Image 1 (spheres, rainbow, N blue to C red):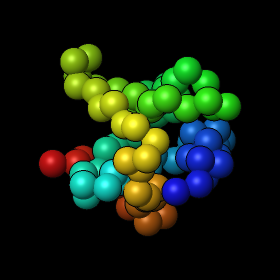
Image 2 (tube, rainbow, N blue to C red):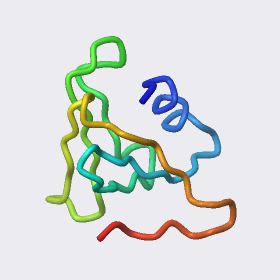
Image 3 (cartoon, rainbow, N blue to C red):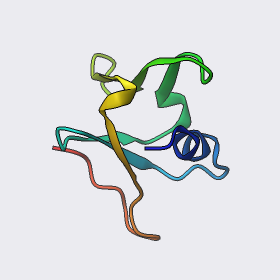
Amino acid sequence: MEYRELFAAIDARPFRPFKLEIVSGRQIDVTHPDNIMVLPNRQRIHHIEVYQTDPWDMAIIWPEGLAALLFPAQGAPAEPSP
């Protein structure tokens, strides 16, 4: 997956919720741009953190584990991941 696609999705205004699919097939919801962090920065990505509504619910993704960036159809509500 191209990182520029991820950065464009994070920076989009208005923001559109999306899902990150990792190589295991798991899909992780990104519901707000403040809920995703690229660490330590966009030039040197070590890992990506995605936070959910529950303060203790987060995902840590290593860049090589990203498989796809998924957007719900226009007008369709985003479904929560299982």
